[in-house]
Structure formats: C-alpha cells, structure tokens
Image (cartoon, rainbow, N blue to C red):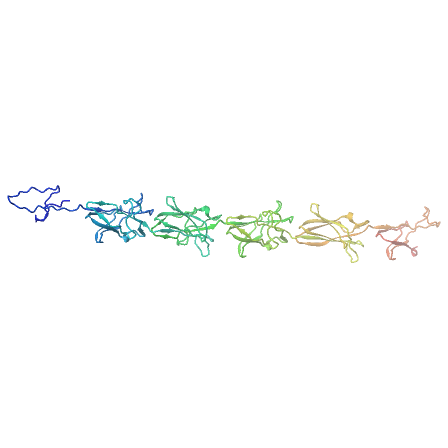
Length: 570
C-alpha cells in the first residue's frame, strides 16, 4: 500500500504519491533537476484471532451450545518469542490482534487465566481449522505466517473441565437416625442414577460390596442423584434425610430416593451424597388360648386368655420387649428390626393350676401351640416388613384325678375297717354335669379305681350296681358328687358294699301229741329264748318268742349258722 503523502518537512524523505498512485502536478523549470518525488510503500496490516470456548463434550471441536470463556489472557509472540501484544477474551470468548505486520507469529494462552480446574482440550481435531482448538497442553500454538492484509480468525482454544466426581455411600441405618454409625454396613447392588436437573440420565452406577458408588469424569453442571427404589433389598425404604448438619454422614435422599439438586464445579470431588436405608418394621404375635381338649390345636369354641405376660428376646437372650395378652388373648410386638428372636411365655403369669399344652401339633402353624413346657419357643428369623402372627400358646388345666376304693362293709356301718377288704371287678363311672359318661374304670384286685387327667369341673361318680357280686348291695350311696379344681387329686370317693340281708325264724309251739307237726289245736310258747350262732359257735343274735310263739332274726349276713333254743327259758 502507498505510504501517507507529504509527511514531515523534508521533501526528499517523504512519500509524494496519493492513494490513487498519482503525484500532485508539479512545474519543472527548464534544466531543473527535482529528485524529491518519492514513493513509500508499506504492507497492508494483518489480523489474527479468535475464540476461546468450553469444550463440554471434550471432543476438541466447537459444538452448538458450548459456552464462550471470558477473561482468558492471550499473548501474541513473534516466532523468536518476542511479545508483540496481549489481549483478553470478551464475554463472547473473542480476542483480536489487529494492524499486524506480515511475519511469523504464535499465540500463548495464559494457563493461570483459565477458570479454576480447567485445562486445554485436544488440539487440531478434524480438518475444519475454524472449529478446532489450536493450542497444545501448555496453551501454545504452532507458528503461523501472516501475509500482508491477511485476516486469520482460526486460532481458537477449547478448554475442558478437569474431571469431577460424585459419590458416595449407601448403608443400613440400623437405628433409623439418618446418620452413619460405626458398624453400620454398606448395601451392595443398589442402582444409582446421575441425572441433570431436566431429568435426563447422565450415568448409572451400582453400589459395590461396601455400599460405595462413584461417578467420575463428571462435567460441571447442575445434577441430582436418583437412588432406584426397586433395587433396594426387599422391604427396605429410605431413612430420614438431612438429619443434623454434617453432610458427610447423613442421608441425602427424600422418600422417593431423590436428592436435592447440586452443582458440580470443574475438578470437584463431591463424596457426600449418601443414602441410609432401614427395614420396614416387622411384627410378631399372636394368641394365648385355653386348649380345653388338650390337643394342642385352636378350636372355635376355645377362648383366649387375658393377662399372660409375653417376653420377646433376641438371639443373645437379651430382653427386647414385654407385652401382656389382652381380653381376647392377643399380644403383639411391633416395629421390630429384622433378626432372630424367640418368645418366652411367663408361666408364672398363667392362671392358677394351668399348664402349657402340647407344642407343634399338626401342620398348621397358625393354629398350633408353639412353646415347650417352660413356655419358650424356638428361635425364628424375622425378615424386614414381615408380619408373623403364628406364635401361639395353648394352656390347659393341670390334670386332676379322682378315686378310690370299693370294699366289703361287713358290718354295714359305712366305715372301712382294717379287716374289711377291697372288691375287684366293680365298675365305676365318671359323669359330667350333663350326666354324660366321661370315663369308666373297674376296680382292681385291691378294690381300687382311679380317673386321671380329669379336667376341672363338676362330676358325679357312680357305682354301677349291676357289677356288684350276686346278692350284694351298697352300704354307702351309689352316687357321689365332686367339683374338681385344676391339679386336684381327690382319693376319697369310696363305696362300701355288703351281702344282701337274710332272715331266719320262726315258731315255738307245744307239740302236745309229740308228732313234730304243728296242729291247729297246739298252743304257741311265748318268751322262749332263741340264739343265732355262726359256724364258730359265737352268738350272733338272740331273740325271744312273742305271744304267738314267733321269733325272727333279720339282716343276717349270708353264712352258715345254728339256731338254738335256750332250754332254760322254757
């Protein structure tokens, strides 16, 4: 290009050509020599720029939506390193060096002017030089040659965030306080999603055996974490979020498993996004009943027992809870952690003279009795959220008994004598209040009978008269009554029997004709003494004839006797 015209005062040194390449008109005198018409030429100025941007996807190319970077310092150097000029990127990420002389230059993007935790992206990706990044890892470009008047706006710089990471921990919040406690274990296999605030999924991870998850190489942006509910262990849910002020140790997700939105800065490591989970509470029960028929199974007619103390223990035999059965016989332990437990029914709280019935009868665990004779069940494992209402206890009255003895009441006084023995083979019936035979027994060789395992109630005890020896009759009542208490043993129900009473007599008369035959005309003998003697000759009874000559021995036991007339009474 033409230099400016007529600069300075020395016409021999200035340029005299106008921009159109012509000089002004001059007048030359004859023979004049004018050596002052000079032309200065200079190179047309060059320009170099252009753009610094955040290479969000780190591909080394400018993509739609990637943001410019303000305030990055850009230095223009000659090829020999001499600093020519400095510029700073504007809000649009642009810088520009103008009025440059043709020559060799390079650019230096000043590293410490980049945003914190950002570095240079990959240089010279692809073939479109106007879209790529041109600086190396130190921010320096290659040397370029600027021609006169050249405008080169292809010298761009992409910067990328240093890798950020987001985590951290899913744990079993065993005490449900929302805080990580020493000894609370991590939860494996929980699915964790990193999402942008618009809900778009960025990445997915799964907790490892220690309960840890980690998202690496996270770009600066705003995100939230979604813990996937259906990946939790069965019957577990999220614990209380944001308890207290220590974000490193609390749980951060709401009841749906979602954390609040959070910003990730370049190079940031955010390992505070934790999740505590707790089991759905379990429960255990159920029922104490009177097992009237002692079969160990609940019947519709068998009622519940109020006031029985029930204790819940863990596997270490530590008492966890205590309950007492209500008016319907029910008890319940709620809000239990998953684990191993057993039940202790406190036998001292059972009704007086009641005992525990048979355990584990049949195959229906919801209808049987589950405790041993001491009231203790086996250990059971409760899962999270489980509602186990099968732990029942049947109790029955302590077995009563009643007896005892049938004897020959020889003297018919209704009182046992040492010389009066028992009678075998006599049938005794035990009847309930309705008259139904509950049990039947037969006296043994010693005259004994016994009804065992009798439920407390009112009964009659009856001697079956048809089982008596021939010509014997009772000397005590045939029917006795008794109200038995639980556990009672009544061995006082005795029966005396004796031979049916015989009689012998009859008449003393004056045998006038001495023929040994009573004749109508022969008179009776009053006041004659008659003696009845047994086989040993002992007088058993004595009688005196009446005015009609009659005597009579009644209520005589069957046996051998002699009847003698006392001659001295004639």
